[in-house]
Length: 194
Image (cartoon, rainbow, N blue to C red; front, side, top):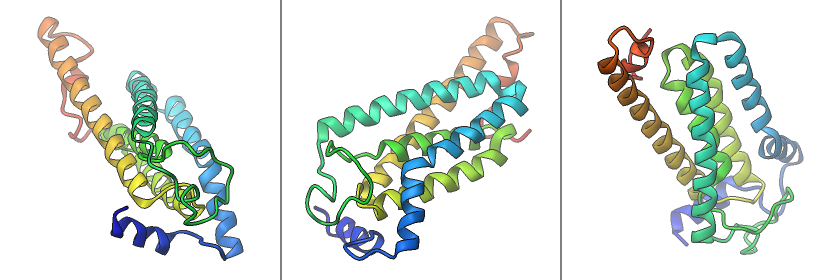
C-alpha cells in the first residue's frame, strides 16, 4: 500500500478511539449525504425548467459513473481499511473492493455536471462541498482510503467532462443540420457564462 495513502488514512480516520460527536457527524454524512444531494437535484429540476434535458443527461451520466465505479472496484478488488484491520468500520459496509469510491465518483460527477452548466453553477457549489465532506466522512468511518476518494473524484470528473464535450458536439451537429434548432443553446461551450 502506498505510504502517503496510509499516512493520510491514519491522519483522517477515526481510529480505535474516535471523538464521539465527530463520529456521529461523519457517520451521518457517510450514510445519508446522498439524500441532500438528491434534494438539490430535485430543486434544480423544479426551478430550472430550461435545464431539465441537461439534468436528465446528468442523471444518465451519474448512473454510468456508478456502473463504471462498481465494475472497476470489483475488478481491482482493493481491500477496505477495516478488512485489513487498520481501523474498525463504524458503519455497516460490505467487504467488496474499495477503489474507487462509488459515493465519491457519483457525487463528484453530479457536482461537476452542475458546475459545467452556467445556469446550475450556484447549486454545483453546495454539491461539490457535500461530495468533499462525504469523501472525508467515508474515510473517517473506516470504509475507504483517501486514494479511493481521489480515484472517485477523478472518475467523476472524467465522466462529467466527457459528457460535457459530448453535449457540445451534439449541439454542433444539430446546429449544422438545422441552424434554427433549439439545440443552438447546447452548441455553446459548457464553460461559457450565461
